Image 1 (cartoon, helix red, strand yellow):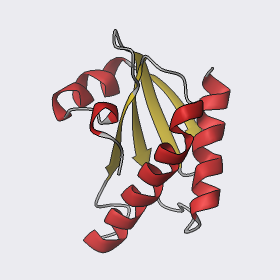
Image 2 (cartoon, rainbow, N blue to C red):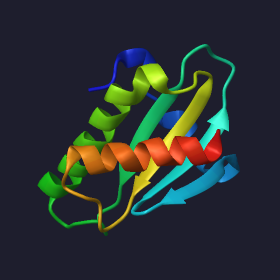
Image 3 (cartoon, rainbow, N blue to C red):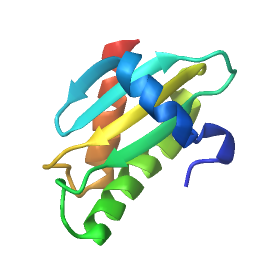
Length: 108
């Protein structure tokens, strides 16, 4: 689980998804926008169209969040990011971590 300061509150998700910059990498889409804080905050959105089973959607969320937690010290601060998970997300935590790393590398 991400530390509390790095979790993006729900009211910010709509604004960021409308006005942020979008980047795609495989089955992940990241929408990112600069914030005025010293920390970066993240949210993970998995639609029902990903899989009808809640257990599969929750697993996808956990994989992305764990990858973010591991990469947190290396990620830039001062950003709000939303990750939209699409069908075809790898089951391996390492592969998801590579996807997340590539998203940030292509942006910054």
